Image 1 (cartoon, rainbow, N blue to C red):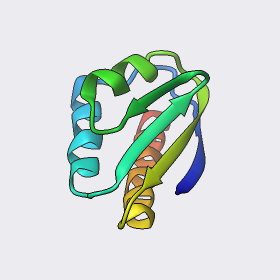
Image 2 (cartoon, rainbow, N blue to C red):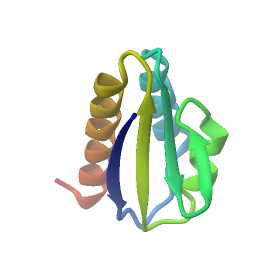
Image 3 (cartoon, helix red, strand yellow):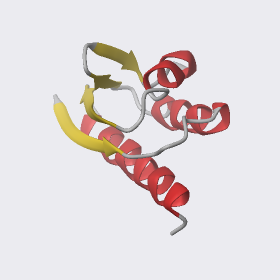
Image 4 (tube, rainbow, N blue to C red):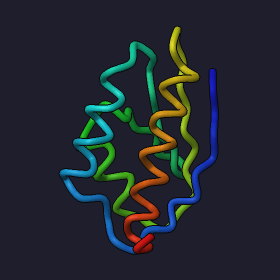
Amino acid sequence: MTEKKIQWTRKTPLSRQEAAGLVHLADRYESGVFLQGGDTLVNVKSTLGLLSLMADAPQEVTLMASGTDEAEAAEAVMELCGRLLRQEAGQ
């Protein structure tokens, strides 16, 4: 299992389009990809799960991936999360 911490510092909630982009990306991989914030664990392949978890921002979340392509899946999701964070910061 691959685990990575993300400081989700956005002040605005994740939009439906952004969540759909994360879901579409995670769906490319066979591995299970999850985000955990506090006691809440959601599948990154679930739009509703992402929207509910990311409504409480800012927070620290843990990205977890498990499966044959877990390293690649985790890296891709981390990269997209980084882009979303930089986008809000205007960079």
